[in-house]
Length: 309
Ligand code: SER
Image (cartoon, rainbow, N blue to C red; front, side, top):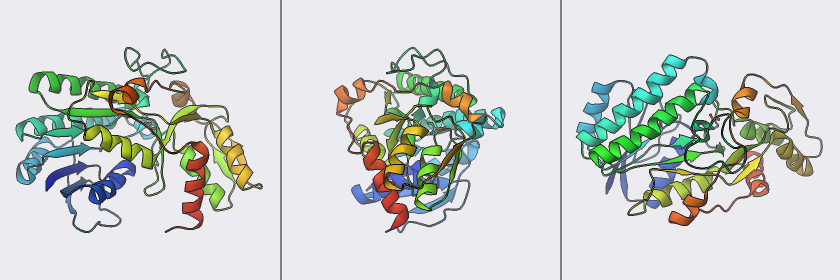
């Protein structure tokens, strides 16, 4: 039984990873967060852990002795702009605390996601290269570039097998995202399914890289199960889409769906990111592939909201 420690376990990605690991692996999971889980998964242990608290982190690692770690606790882009110091403390200090605890406790492999937020206005808008364009203008992006540099440092200095992916906007329904710039995608589909009008905080033609959660999970696990990897950080993306394109696809299914556009501060964040990113290394190195295009994603999401399992 693999001993797996998860941080940020109640979040959009954490809640899905627990379910995925439970279904696919013989594992003993310790799920940690600073809030209580809404529902507890049978057979999973839950514990309070604030990743900013180094002594607490070390003691929980020492007690549980994880072999694998999924460090998902982070403040996302939109919330990140509200308090840069808190964002830095959670994202950068939290990450170095986890990396350090991995080394002192002999963790075999760690997964720590990065984001399209590492890119900035100087990045080519289309097919953004994996390397050399990480000059973000958001606090979230700055902390994630720092984290990516820490992964390389901990790997070369301590031989820690830390793996990362730059997630695009993730579309999912289990735990809805509430703190990012790409969350309009989930919110729009949910409003449509509930027969409500949606007010979008981005302009209709703002294109961003996106992906459906089942593809994010299967590819994350595929990367984690490779014996060796050539890079510490890989790009993830299924499709590049905009609120306007999503609105049109949804309206083909729900003809009276209405969207109003009222861009706010998140427009500037979105405009600082590329519309699409290069995934060649992920495809060539370990076979990244996605089953859901945008239409299939929207259909599956609508099905879930209109007839939940
Ligand atoms: N979904 C994230 C955000 O919008 C991007 O990685 O903050």
